[in-house]
Length: 308
Length: 253
Image (cartoon, rainbow over all chains, first blue to last red; front, side, top):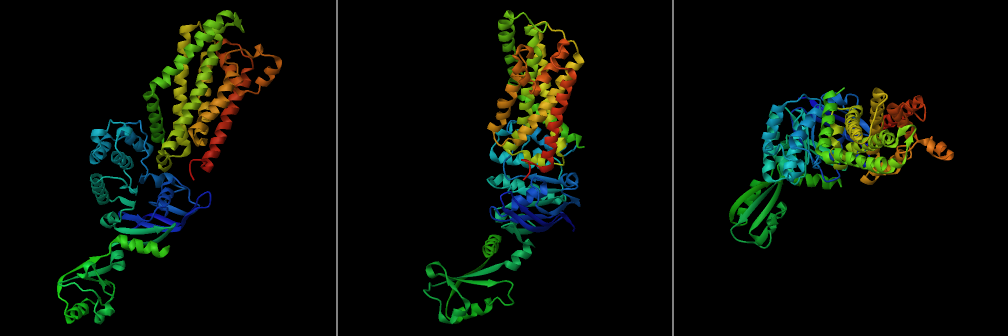
């Protein structure tokens, strides 16, 4: 796989001195789904805006599909579709005109069949003659997606696409995203919903304070960073951890009915076998045993917290 | 050149125009008819002739210019300001179009609308007064040049404006007074000598004079000066727009 978007040392200092991006370098592979996670003001939207052409970088270079975004902006931008965070739409225009306009703006010849396909896919076909202002927020979001897809992009940016979106649209959207990926479209999304990044992304990038903290294969990231927790439910409640079990750093759960043991899956030995036999030696009767893996959210909070 | 994109912008803008038909067509026609009734019929009946032309006919070129200038400026400034205001400018900036193409789309649409309004007013004028156009081709040429140059000015205003107040400010405080004082309703020679001299610094005088020449074959300033004035004005607007595009002024941070 080769990089379809390649950013090198991209820095953005806004007028007024705000350092939104600090020498960001990032390679996005062709055909992958990359999730960019980061708190508000981390620089996610600025990075997307620089790549798409709404904001000039202060320094650094970016190429999309081998086209430099400044010297060959036509080549670069014609590959890109963008679904912005804000619901920015001309309110008095009909849905279908708004979507066809986007296709024309990108220099693509009129293709009614393609527009119809997209509108149907997004359940907008019934609303094609409605004015944009008559639509609900979720419907407007669908129109924005339709506009971005109208010109058949090879790289699709979704900036917080599911903010304020109902469950149904979210489901539809992920279905479309998976369909696009199957067609070889590269997708970059920013989201606050970590479970979504977890569910859909191939790779996850974490950005905070204008810097990319890491970009990793999602599974690898979770395996590497993943701490697991063993929860042992007891037959009889206890009030304190027996002194002989002190080395395990056990925590007593609520009502004294359970013990929690945290371990690292990366460790050579997890210590589970020893713990279980020591528990038995202490005469504690086990009712149930379960494990839980830390989510991306835990990883994310850990990373951003460390950086702060 | 991304011609498809220019066409898309042009059609999108023209659709907006036809959507607001009442505001776009009916209101200029109505206000012009009022001018004809008040100035042409009521006041004009007490005035014999101006420069050998009946007063009702004399004000026709000025009235058309008044509407065309304000319409061109308003259309073009609103056309590019509105996407900035509602945020849809993101799409223009992220599309594979150059600033020049964006400008051609918006200015072309604004000028077309103003031209249509101008022609409609001309048509309305025939209802009220007897008109003979001495140089029809020159008349259309002057009309076209005015439409385009003032649309360019409007485009600059729309990019510069940060809010609706600023959008109205220049048309209200600069263009309307210049047009009214530029001889729309009177001949410059009717003014006291001091004011005649001052008026010569008003660029609109040259446009209206040239346009009036196309109608009646008589001009207050030479036709060459009129053409030079339009050329200078258009050149200045293009220079400013060139600078805007080079720097991304108020378009890209």
